[in-house]
Length: 89
Image (cartoon, rainbow, N blue to C red; front, side):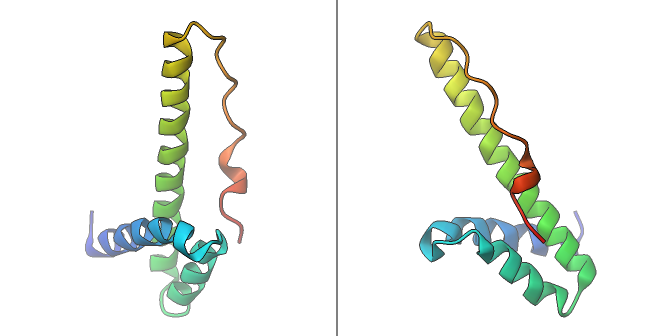
């Protein structure tokens, strides 16, 4: 990755980690607005990194749930809804 993508990804990771502390998912949009005031390109990279990281977390949680269900002999759960509701603009 280039420096912009590295910075955006690091900031996305830190922002996601701060969600529980701050207590609102709007933190991602707020940070994106601050970035966008200086660089739309970096803002887009940040939002992409945040989406990728949130999607990965959701997919890993679902995978672990399916594995646990299979080991317990339970019927498989349906996948969660799509990611279009993750980040609002």
